[in-house]
Length: 591
Image 1 (cartoon, helix red, strand yellow):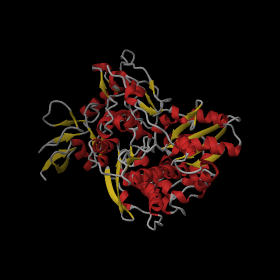
Image 2 (tube, one colour):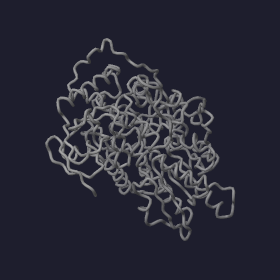
Image 3 (cartoon, rainbow, N blue to C red):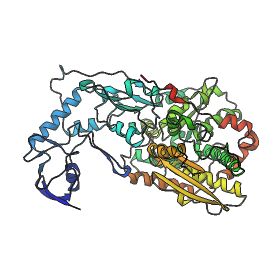
Image 4 (cartoon, one colour):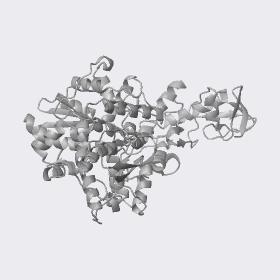
């Protein structure tokens, strides 16, 4: 490897050729402020447009200041990162950005967690020169079911564009207009709801300001909890329990299941349930569907659709509904665990507690912003009343617990309520990439072979590789499994299916990096793969400690089928627990 010698702030540095000044400085402990730059190195994403000019440095012999994030080092280079000239330029650039930025920090959703705000504090900005005559660019607000776009706060860093186009390959966002009115938005400035957006929320996760935020449902939740005429119940997803602790300064990967339950009770929920219960239910339906298709395929039925694709992730569902409309019959028709829970809660459970459907409020705590949209889908409503009334993210819950002045650290560990709170280890691993298909295999193996599965840990299905595959032995029958997380990786598998190159029997797909543990509603991980790995490890620890680790052995699931549903893929279960998919390409506006 060719090395380059240079001087940075009077420090002698030897660094590989091709390294940027920013990275070289960082390696010797010199911090250069950045705004548009983003390095999600563990996800192989580096965004370095050099557009904001906050990271400029002085290079001896160069007339103008150089953006350190995109300027490579050269032999003998002499760099000054904090000279008076540099400081003056950074302050001027920042003041110009602030002059075209709303002064709404007190009410902004990103207040306290805004990169622009933090820079202003760090640089001691106390006034903006000529603010009284500075022109402000103004845009209309765009509110979708899951994401709010306030483009008045957009600083054109274009991080969201990189995530949407390069990592997720969705293509919903791009730079539009020219000059002062340039901004990142869907084509022709259409509403996000009318674009190909999947609501995965990865754009929100990387936005440095309040230009992209989730739709906040905590205000509605507080109103419902205060309403004596409403019975408010809650379900919480597996990935929430391994990330919520980060909101309270606990190390990444800390399991807070018991404290989570206790906090939800203190907020005033009548019943605290676990989405893991309906994850077990999902396995009963989706696993049975897999075996039904596989049996037909082995008997020579040429009409059967294989590979079967998992359908738990609404971001992924939105993706294929808008971009792979010729493949709508391939995914499983099983609803997601969130929606199965809502359907059972407003029928089976509502009858048990003798509460009318319209008086029962079902709230979900999810790591995912697409879940907010999923709640609003018409197929998940009865006479206009949704099965799940609304969803709040892990971040929203963390903020709400703090607002309620609940001392999270001192909370005792409490148990979920029954009957919708009992779950198995197979259910909790839904939170990690590969977990859904592993849970399905644990049940499908025993049903298909009629033999007891002694080894329930399928390590070959685990990992952080973007695309993974494994062949499992079902008592002599090889079952080929594919796994992808991140929609860019999903696209590759889907295109193989479309071209006839795929030989898998089943494929699991999750929209977000690492699966639900890296969802768009989780505490920000900033691309640090170690945080995702620690969350994943916590998921598997909870699985290993469960007394029951196969979904079909959950006694409350067995009882639900005996008392109410009948059998998997039966008439009632098909009505309440399955769905259909919609061609959304017709909704996209082309000009």
